[in-house]
Length: 304
Ligand code: 0X9
Ligand code: ZN
Image 1 (cartoon, rainbow, N blue to C red):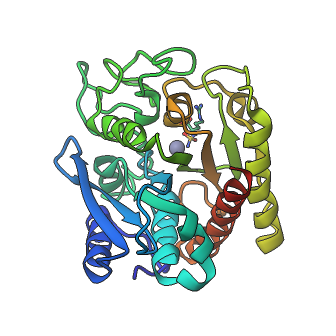
Image 2 (image 1 turned 60 degrees about the vertical axis):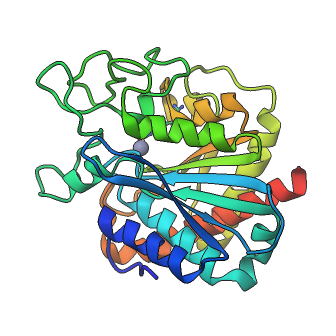
């Protein structure tokens, strides 16, 4: 299992989920769902309790959209550890759900940020655009209110929406995952950093969905569980007015619009150093993140 003492690269994370699937053939299933622009394999791991029940409800989790947000893949891998190795504490979560996890959506960007201090704060993908600038913001590339407010037309901008919706193979993979699980999908969770926020739709407009109360109730369960566990105070609310900007073409709105009744962006904590929580902070951040996610999943079980 992957420890929490350092950050891992994409190859190590893929190796980890491959090993898990091989060692737990009845409980963990690996699926190759696509390839990044530079040719890295995008693989999901589906974790079950191994019982015979088919077509359970699904929780879909992804991490590593934005290259520099290293704590996000770390939290996704910790979640995988918990669901596989801590069946005693999490039996209820696997009785009702299959969990599908894509730990690193944007591996090209993630690897690029590991090259040097100069590239550490890269955010986007790594596919060249029509201009000299490289990369698209994968979280502005989804085909729902694509390239409206809070997304840029300028390929040199860090929020460049791309030449068209789903121009980036990495975003398209997540879009396809959303569609392939939506019939069974109860919660979509995308892990970002930083800010200690649980954001729910909409993010493309300041308007809120009819079901805001449900979204709020589930988010509040995560918020209070985290506060109880560590004292960390998460702010929860509709994306646009809570993070204080509009951003269109993002995956959370896409998943919610497609039919996931619960869809959150979780902005993990600052961790002392922004996008670079020191390795010594990884353990506490990913553990409290898991506490929040488990509490939200339990609230979903109760509600639906
Ligand atoms: O701007 C983003 O993509 C997310 N914040 S980050 O600092 N990690 O880049 C927030 C996305 C919130 N959701 C929507 N606006 N739909
Ligand atoms: Zn992000």
